[in-house]
Image 1 (cartoon, chains in turn cyan, red, yellow, green):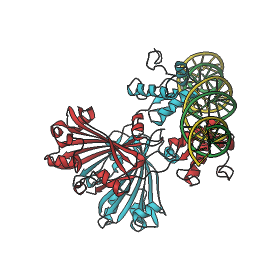
Image 2 (spheres, protein in one colour):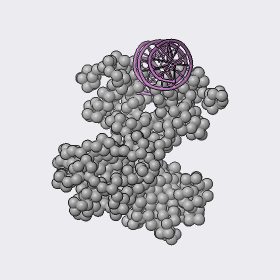
Image 3 (tube, chains in turn cyan, purple, brown, yellow):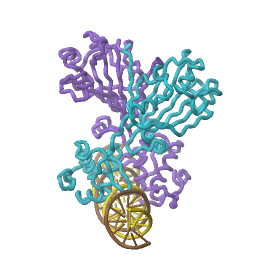
Image 4 (cartoon, chains in turn red, brown, blue, cyan):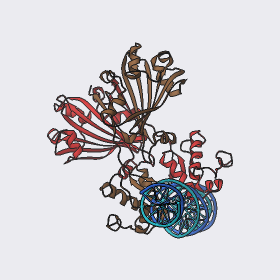
Length: 262
Length: 262
DNA sequence: CTTACCCACTCGTCTATACGAGTAAGCGTG
DNA sequence: CACGCTTACTCGTATAGACGAGTGGGTAAG
């Protein structure tokens, strides 16, 4: 029996104040919430809904666009509209920069992904000196030029995070930090070796809709926000030694922090 | 001179692969990014853009809907489409539960808003005993029923945050915590007085698009995600004594954390 | 001068139609 | 069997038109 003849979706109330396309979206949303359509499952096609509700195609498309904006469904050209599966999330703990996680040869990202049984990947590596933006300059304490390390992280082929580290030139230039591969333990290990004992980090978190650029880079579906995290690392004298600007696909992350109740 | 005759917006390339409505959205976005349209300023009306580009109205509306999804603009029925102003953000520091912030008579929210010169407000107060959801029960260590304290926070009349605190009944029942107004210092101060010395907090952060309910409660514009924060408070024995579930308008908040580099 | 109405302009909703392009399965040919 | 074509179904883009409803300014009536 088709999902439409089985009473899965009801009728519209033409006398209601609520617009037709909203009523349709409401019914589809409820059906999804109740699990009548499962993750990854195909919704009825536009044509089927046009027949079922007796409305025009634009009205049906309008209701789909609402659900897309809510991140509930995604359309695939030539195939159909599907309930968006919730991808496995990466859990970032606040102790992820603790010493014990830095002793190993591989980066935290690789180690953690291997443990979770997924296939990690890092690409778009770029390391270069450039002019510091106003914001980065302020955060690093009025430096004009910086070393920028850009990279993109993927899990099982899906881009989940795009990060750029900025370091003052007087710290990073001519050191392994300026190499594409900074070696075991990453740049934090190198900073310590260079005598910059890391004292604490400061993280700033925002959430917003992605720019078109970010949609491309992270291959984001409609209705997926990004988490924008800016971390500053300070040495023992309180000097900022690195700023890391990270944009994450919000549906792939949960951040977790432990706070003392001082 | 009208914004349209002044070369602010260009022409369309009909031979391009890029859809017309995307090209229009691109041009408007760029104009906004470059500050050609300022915050709160009105964009050209649908009719004006129809004339300028020589496309149908649906095409123009389609491009507006893209920009709305990106949170760049918002439409006002009968008035026009406007560049969405960035509201002042509330900065939540990770030491906001430190002792020194709890000594005063007023809640942290009120104190902080007063200091920032804005008008704070708390409403939708509800305090009641209820059945714990699966998730809350797990977080509190398998309790069946809880005391739930719901409230909504507003700044200058705008709802910015909706929070619910859950506490085990054996801790909260019959104490000031079960009163609508728990008294100076809030429920954390009361917990301490009751002998539950707070040891540390754990915060989990997600970002996602709001549910229709949340859109209503927080009066969210299109294209504004929410930050979902779940905080668990632990006492000295490692027992969870409170879970606070908070949904924040993402455009109104920056979260900030200090992490030791242990 | 003030009030009430009208009207022009705005976005919101909906219909009907057309063509393009991606997908997948079936079918026929080599 | 393997390959390529056709075909039917999917969503994507775009047009043209209609009516409704909220807003605000101007105008005519009191």
